[in-house]
Amino acid sequence: MVRITIDGLDFEVPKGTTVLEAARRNGFEIPTLCYHEALEPIGSCRLCLVELGGGEKGEVVSSCTHPVEKDGLVVYTESPAVLQARKMNLSLLLARCPGVKCLQDLAYSWWVDSTALPVLGDYEKECILCGRCVRVCREAIGKEAISFTFRGVDRQVLPPFKQQPDDCIGCTACAYVCPTGAVKVTEEEGRRFIAPWKSDLPLYFCDSCEAPVTTIENSASLEEKIQETGLPPGSMRPSFKTGEREPEGTGSDPEINADEEMLCPRCRRRRVTESIARLPREKQDRSWIKARQGYK
Image 1 (cartoon, rainbow, N blue to C red):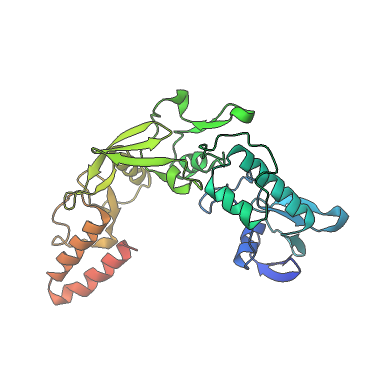
Image 2 (cartoon, rainbow, N blue to C red; image 1 turned 120 degrees about the vertical axis):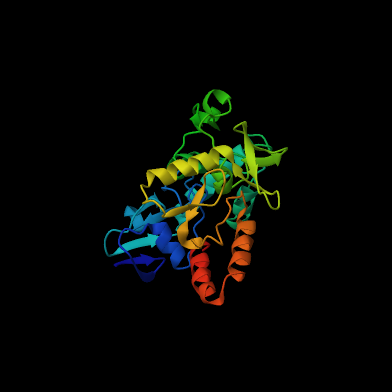
């Protein structure tokens, strides 16, 4: 553990913790847009700025990328230099994307005048170029369906050649991490559409309730990842007729896993519950424990 002082209060945090994590764990509010717990921090939005040291030798840095490595680090989250830089960066984002609600909310919370700079962007523009979608596709999913293109005011996030990306598996991770809702996902007539990537992918449906489960490409990608883990035979059991697998912890009794229907998570849990209820009393306790371990 190392000691850190934040706005005059002393705390102990694990060595290597970023200043942002240390501050948030101890109740300090620092705004972010590009930061996400599941991704490597890059500090591109410049809203999480803090001042280290203070005074004439104070240094303004992005808190999401600065680790706490030794005792005695002094941090100011709302010093005059920090507030000035944070408000300017937020004003620039608002000038580019004036219609984005999360930017408007931040401007209200931090007393930023939304009319301080002339509006340079379209009110319909929702992408703030935080890069979350690009990073989650590359870091978490292992694909490169989208990337940054062009430079300066023309910078955009697009698929290669502005065509439907071959790498897109329709996992919707990009939409999940997008802070502004710029990535739109719709499902119609058995297909999943992801804008603005122009992705159009067929869906598998639950055999029981007919709810959409996942795309064919996403199911195949999951199967590949499972094979890459090198798990021993029997450590993963079939749960979908598409070949998708899940941990054996959900039970290995033949009465429970008699079929391999395509089921959504809700119907799969109901099927397991109904199957366990039909088992002899002495086998139910063991099966419930396995089911609970598998559906955490």
